[in-house]
Length: 360
Image 1: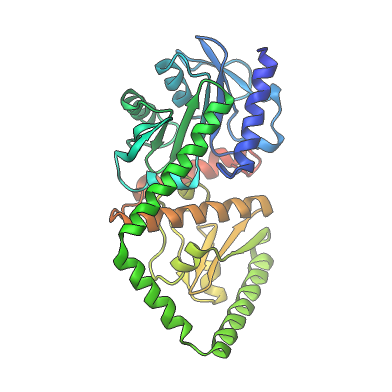
Image 2 (image 1 turned 30 degrees about the horizontal axis):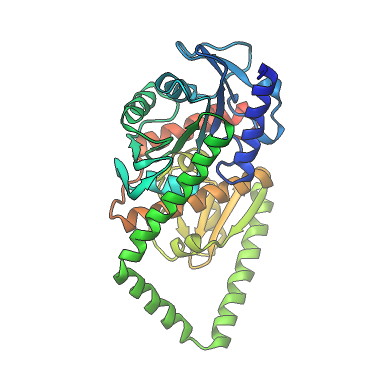
């Protein structure tokens, strides 16, 4: 296969990742092997939907040096580690897919499968946490790759690395990993019969409220949300979206701010998302240092410089809420520490947002 064909396959993979919901905007990265010495990889901070084959970067497996003026993905070391470890692997994708990301926040060193899987054998290894793009993260990935017998590993508080002999097998690994992780979480939920009973009681109590009372309360909440959306637009500009996904509304009923359980939350949203009353002053104050805010018992407002960025905030917030409730389910409520969260936020605001014209 020619270099242009290989570069085009990387571009095509990036588009498929976005459309399949395995990544948002420029998160994640894709590469394919050229030979025993080098590989093509997606550049840093570029939108996959507008990426061109000529922008794909050639990187050395041995020393990570690269050709040309375009900077390769900061996770190039992870890809090189896979190619060094497995001579028959020719395609690697690093994703931030939802269910695998939830598993990444559970504090597990591996998840054991109930039966052997054709792609993962009997377990999926979770690499120890380290800040993205660092040598420490690469070392943890190497350690995980040495233990795995499958075609994917999970990166704690981050996402997943999936690989295969070609484009199709790498994507098959990513889709299969998502299903396996989803089943793993669902099995835990099913086992927690007490929590399920409690949730059922809560729903039954809500249903006992008179229908007219429910409708009136719902109408008032929607009116409040529309007012707040217009107020934020007028004050901050950009785009504001009301997020009322199930896990978002569920978290909006709590009192404590949501902390980062995943790297991309700390980067694009901030070090915490507060839960506030539906009041203008409280909402604007919460949005000073974050891209989202929970409105008590209603949902969350997600802000971005444009609609694409607001949707990315929405997607990441959904995922982090799922990670939080997954951590609760597995009794491991341990977010990323404050210092590392602050550092990632700073790097995002000062570096990656500039690389993509304000879009990571």
